[in-house]
Image 1 (cartoon, rainbow, N blue to C red):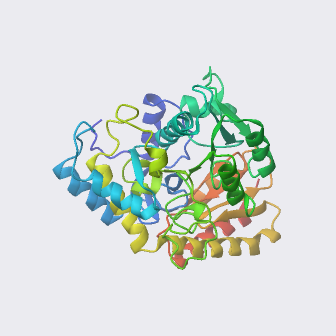
Image 2: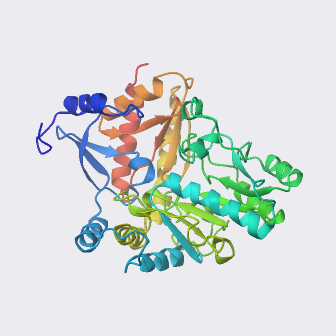
Image 3: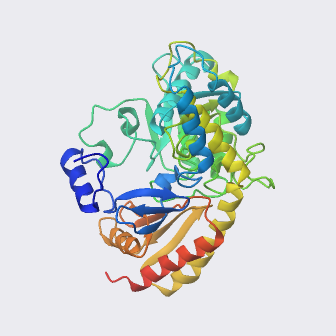
Length: 426
């Protein structure tokens, strides 16, 4: 079979089943094209994308500015490693640090790599700046977290599918309940070896769980009180997804919702990925101020591809699109509209318990058990009606369209969702 030969959905799925590892369970749709909020399968059927590659495609599929930045840079210089300087990385670091108001950026490629990087920085800071005895530093994490699937990260996951039969696990993590300040303070005041608190501002994989008002600011205050680093994993929630440039911006009163200048919570370490490239290229980053990032010295950490010229060009273009097209503002307004429309419908059905979310990161809770197939079956029905979404945790369906969506498109999608739910037969 030639790589240029057209292929049917059935054949494409069969090829993956035969030649690929079975580490995913995709919805049975084979996509071959994307533009803006739409994707097309190999037979030409058009769909609304309501997953955005887990919030990587916030700027829409194949955004021309991002694609152009990537292709033009690829013609000139793609990779040097960090053995040499290149003419793009410094410009990208300056642009990104000024955008997010931090002193320094450490470039990586994927979200999980960025989380691992933040953990290393936090521990090194604890030994060299806080004075914790070497090899004793611990980091607090939350139950139902999702920070990736590396060996270290699954060590503090409570997802049995991600953990089972991958041990022995990495020590040095203390797990507490999410959205519980009392649990956080209890550990902080009883353990002097705490280096940091790693938290998602909204737990996306857990079903778009939005914490109580004041939880994040309260957690940051406790971290300051006990001299512990507040580490925000904004790989999924960052880059305008929740109606602000960062979810940690909170409910700031800024008229400019993509500024990150006066946030509700300023993380000590910020982790970004996914939409940092608009989904066009693997780009992630860890940001911190000099008093923290200065613990990293030559040889401590690195990546052959981290900070490559294409990634730098793509990263700058992706952030420019967010500002120029006011995507945070759009996500805020359309998110309010989405939840309002569904909240009108939900009281009329027994199929859906509630809708929750922030900006254009939302989910509906299906009235069935986690081990039921109902949410999956609804997503299959949505696919037939021209909208792609996927369940999480069995009975929750996450809705996260590209942030370039218009009001008219959103209302069309709401109509598809409601129509599907009304017609659904268990």
